[in-house]
Length: 140
Image (cartoon, rainbow, N blue to C red; front, side, top):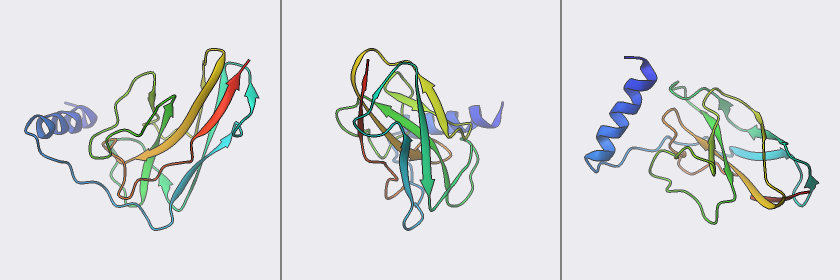
């Protein structure tokens, strides 16, 4: 069984048993932000979103290394995800477990919100969460 599958299996067992997973401490002063596009910008699809990070490093999912995590892009979410569970992966929660620092996404015409959150080696947000300001873009 590969390491990642093994880690996911353990997480699923813990969640099924109703146990809370411990959150990884965030380094003091760590912050994540969207470099581009700018808040309020009008863009064309596909949109390239560039991620910025200070005060911590990037490590792929499944790699446990102090003061690191990997990016997750939240698209058009009303609120925040549950901070005590692994972040889901769907059209509104994009994972970058390979350590990527940018993505090109297809967005329908109209207004959209984008926000970044860092996840630890098993996709759980840090404590405290390292989360960007939410920005809005309009796709023409």
